[in-house]
Image (cartoon, rainbow, N blue to C red):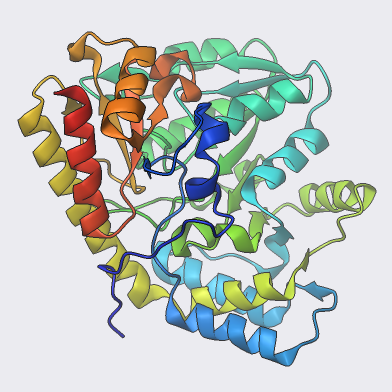
Amino acid sequence: MTYNFNEVVNRKQTRSVKWDTMEDVYHIDDASDILPMWIADMDFKAPQPVIDALKNCVDYGVFGYSYLDEHCKNAIQSWFNKRHEWHIGKDWILAHSGVVPAIASIIETFTAPKDSVLITPPVYPPFSNLPSGMNRQLITCALIEDDRNYSIDFEDFEEKLKQGVKMFILCNPHNPGGIVWSKDTLKKVIELCVKYDVLILSDEIHADLVFPGYQHIPLDKLASDKEAQKIITCTAPTKTFNLAGIHVALIISPDKDVRQALAANFTAHGLGVNRISPFGAAALESAYNHGEDWLNELINIVSSNMDYVISEITKAIPQIKIKKPQATYLLWIDYRETGLTEEEIMTKLLEKGKVALEPGTKYGEEGRGFLRMNVACAPQTAKDGVERFIKALK
């Protein structure tokens, strides 16, 4: 099946967080003429097989309690085996409503108030917000940035682990940097965390959004049976197939004790174990069984959008530097050579260019001097965004 990724879908007045909440997010009176290129959801329709599965669910008309059944687990197993050569046991899988709530459940289950949680900023904001909000001590090991290339500072990483860290949260692939971590890097993470008895929470929600020439490596895939006891993976079909509003995610662990502890936490919060909505179950099964062609086309269109955006913006404004990411549909834009402060560039973008991007400090102070731009949209929309960005800074 060929999909129309050139279609511009009007998402205004659809209860879209991306399109309909900018007044609150950016503290402006009227955002009706602003193009949103901020939050990480796409402006593309979901794969047609997923839409059809959801229509069938609606037509059935009974929306009682549902769960992650064998059909869903078969689809999950098949997908990760085929796309990532990762062989997951059915009993390893727990369902949740989303990756962020799943991260919260894992933090609450395996750490206590005042325990230390390590992150590597700049990184996805919930990695800092959740531990801090749950009265955990946040420890940071800033990524090394060299000409917009990021790496883990393993000397500092180990020093931080020595301080009694209980959990490390890994973003794999990395958001916002778009890094597909190498096998050597991931093995070093495992080695050090096992050495200091630190649990690793690996957020792999962007695993499927990797460009040709790169290959996502699930962290658990590199671990021995003993090492795997220290790894909990979070992932979901929602980022891959633009299903964020469906609310379904996966926690994967080969360790029975880990799963039992999480199940107890779910029960204590009234969540139930492996309970998901009928829509979540239908979307997940269909996406993993029938969504691969759509995803392959998506990756091509996003890659093309990125090439266009990078070429046009850096040609028009040489002080802007953009490295094409290895994964995600998010550009990490370096504006440090413009001399503008974050407040100044955000004001220019919103008021003059009429385009909404995310400020780098949302991802930690280490993100200062950068912007995050979502280009998962029709090429026409990407072109519009480029014109607005250039207008803002010219």
